[in-house]
Length: 597
Picture 1: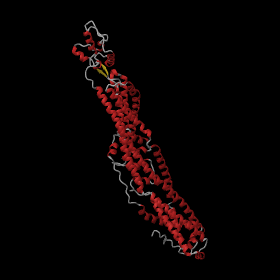
Picture 2 (picture 1 turned 180 degrees about the vertical axis):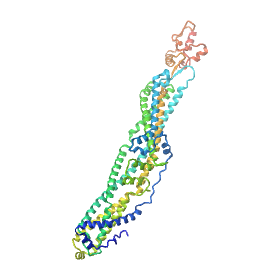
Picture 3 (picture 1 turned 45 degrees about the horizontal axis):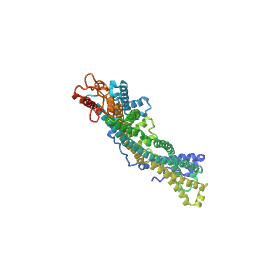
Picture 4 (picture 1 turned 90 degrees about the vertical axis):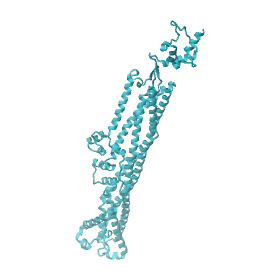
């Protein structure tokens, strides 16, 4: 019934119709054919609505708990609607921005406060804040002093945590980011292929339509309808009306080609951006490796100080080379954590648009509304149709309608050409006026053109099918952006915060890899003096002693060390182990030699 294009309403004979139009034959023919083409177009629309509709329904986005928790972060009265970032109103944009940067601001404030405290401790010095100023621990000679042990354990734990979370930053964070970008790149490549094919097809459709219009005008100029007025088997009006019905989609086809070119440009730019910037480079691992190396050096240095193994060069390297690099890396970790916190909140908000619980689908539609896009435009309708899972009315219905109209025109033209061939040249010369051969050649060209247009529109229908487009969107938005990306950002933010907090803790407790400075009650530096006496005792086994009475004293008075014994029992208690040589205190060796004399 669709292919039957003969209409009963046109009952006026061809001869009388042509005679009434007289010198204005072309305008009259076109006007009469347009009236007929309106009926054809309505029938085409009705017949192709079912054909263009698809039974495919896209999946519904399921919000994860991580997205919901981050989206619920405090905003202090400001909006959490991500689409407001595209608003033309500056106050609306700032309203969302102020709410999204809360976590980032909190991180920066803690960083500044901690660095200020470390700087303040350094300025106050050892006499005011002790080892917190970066100086060595000062341990009295008497009593247990457990603070260095606790501080060193803390530093070793923090450095170990930095190494562990540096690995997690790569494996759980950066790796998921590149899984996300790989998914986006794959989807972009598939979309690029579809868009490129759509551009080619739409351009061919436009060119073929222009050629068809030219051929149709040639037929009208050759008085196509009246060339064989007595041959009722030739239905020229059906051919002309079907052509005009197809031409009514010319405007839609041109708009489709134009929007396809714009989409191709945008997709190409985005694909180039991903290829150039969102790729793994070897130099990106340098800060993480440097962080791990610095932490390992601090662990070794702290262990050496704990074991009281002196290595002046190694301590100097830690304090003047490794520590400044470590400080820069720690500061960079804090700043990076603040940046990724903002990205994490924005990502969660983007995946929570619309009514609760929210979805990225609603966010995309809201963004188009904020950008004040025409809701009746092809771009708006296409995006809405794809992101909503093919539930709305397809904006590509005109392609299906155009395909049906072109198929009808091609079939009608082919029927006309076949009828001419069946009638034969001799019969046409006897019953037709004018150059029938030329008209027949034009009709054959027209039929070929319409057949190619039919193939192009079928390809366009395949390219604009909702299912593959929605699957690409679901992969990019639901899976990559709202699953892998959120997980990656959470791991990156958490790892950077651990690196930053542990890094500042190590900087604050940097005295851990310095040797302890031991003082007696009087305030003398026992560590240094005892070390010197220990060396002298090894070089000179006998220490010259004078008479042990009230008026005599040794040449190296132990009173300077605050070690003059008050009793024989206290002698062993007061002499530090560092003074003992060969398990015998040098003072006792001197006393033994004196007695021998």
